[in-house]
Image: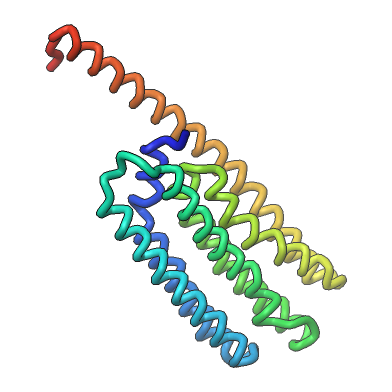
Length: 209
């Protein structure tokens, strides 16, 4: 059964997360116009814009709901949207910088800038998304792993080094998210115990100020 506080924590800070992610998409769209095929870049940005709009509407609908039921559904919806967002960023390296389209060092430079975009998004979302390990992984795994192995598969030492750093960063951030998730779980357990204690005191007409 999905914990209500977990869902509330995910949606509570989601507007900030969506805005930051969309700002990064705008910057990436602007930055890669000179090196990417305009059609591919435009389609990617339009899809990302629609995704962001849907996520804003989803959070608005959640805030209008009573939160008394359907927590599992709200969590699944959040997870799916996060997975799509992560996949969009994971595909960016393949779409924006096709293999062989740029000179070696220029390719490494642009892949490195993409890495900074994605690393910043993962670092910025870790507090919110770590409320659920599955939600965190739904964003970070498709954003990091495909690009890391794609860079390593390039074969040269520069791309391989960058891919290895990217993959190591993903592992470290995942371990941090596990720790944060445990803190959240302990906090939720304490809140649940306090709620049970209040209910017990109320049943026995004991007031505690």
